[in-house]
Image (cartoon, rainbow over all chains, first blue to last red; front, top):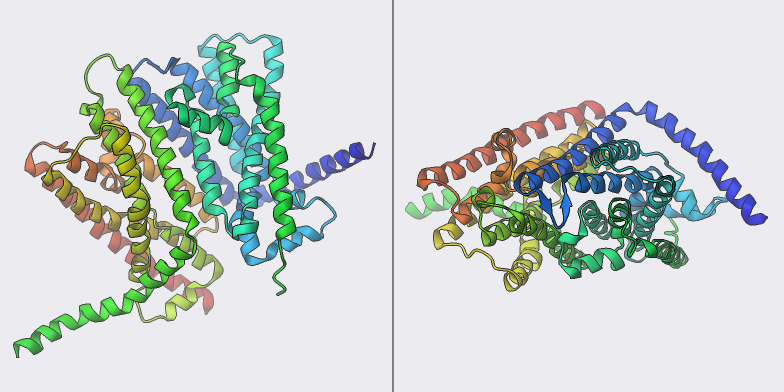
Length: 268
Length: 281
């Protein structure tokens, strides 16, 4: 019962704070324009790469143009969802420990991780990513004549949610490294960059790289595994999705708590 | 008399040198404090290169006829590998640091120093590039040279590449400084940087060699300064030009962009300083 009330309380808070963030969006239109424009350029660049690859060859590593497009579009969905709620972690990695400002989150009556994240919800880039992701996935699925069964269609939100949790966990773990190193921005940036490759079929890569992206930094589970299932019905990777998600979330929380325990206030 | 004349002529350069070495030294010291960064850079670079290389190798393997963009497999691999390395050398974080100073207001202190701010920034950025070259670029290239067939450059190619890569550092610096100075205009420098990163990488030829782009897109890329960052140096290295005239043209274009961007950055800096004075007055 108490777990339920806690969950209800956090849901209510999230709802309320999201409304606050949404209000802030309308205040800072320039931020919104830059965020949305930057996102379109980035996605446009990725689409152009895919287009230029398929100008040269009809099929790459067993995937055709529209299948790769589907994968790319799907990879934007968990990314957008994650970005809507957790981009505050970048600021932790870059600044909050170094400047000593982190103590603010320890004295609030919510979990410190939630206190940090809730400072700003609903980054505009996240909306853009979700909308473009849905559009690309939809278009590709239509071109592929993908008539998904109701069961698979119902599974999609769950797959996206798990993917977003994986991304958020990787981000949390790398951002929390700043409790030890004071600035973990380079590490987080590096980890995040590798995530861009979740949008390409992993069959392309050398087995060692595939292994890295599947088990070490499991970006494969955010797009490749779900897309292979939805496109080809492949379940060998997908079976591990719940295990990987749960294990990674647990690991991220462990790193986070160890880090917070280690945090000392600057005294200034 | 001749000695005095030589001395007189040489003084400004010597003074300049002495004036800017502390910036380079301080930047180098700062770098050495975060040694883990090199390890992170090396791991990321190795992986990112691997992902790019395998994508284009798959394209090469799957083609039905002809060489993609006129590149054979070792050349394409060399291009993709060195494109990432050039991008690493050009990423001196000048944009981030300038924008940070503007946002924190520290820029006021820099204005008090009797040095040219852009030159001081360049002096501070150079060690980052050199250290990255030594600790990341060379080892990664050697590693991939062991793993995959690369295209060995001719002596002329190597020489032209060295010259061209030097110019690309100046161009990269100019672009980064301009992005950093955008911090005077917009508070969301983060957004500007993300836009810059993707646009520059794309039009430089870092993700797709310019020769593989469709005509109109390649034409746009050739009009922008960014192709001088990656595509220019690599075409010179791999000998992908028709005759010495075209090679000279690539270098001249680079020199032009280096001068033009430096002038633009100097202008932007002057404008920015005026803005600061207005705000402070």
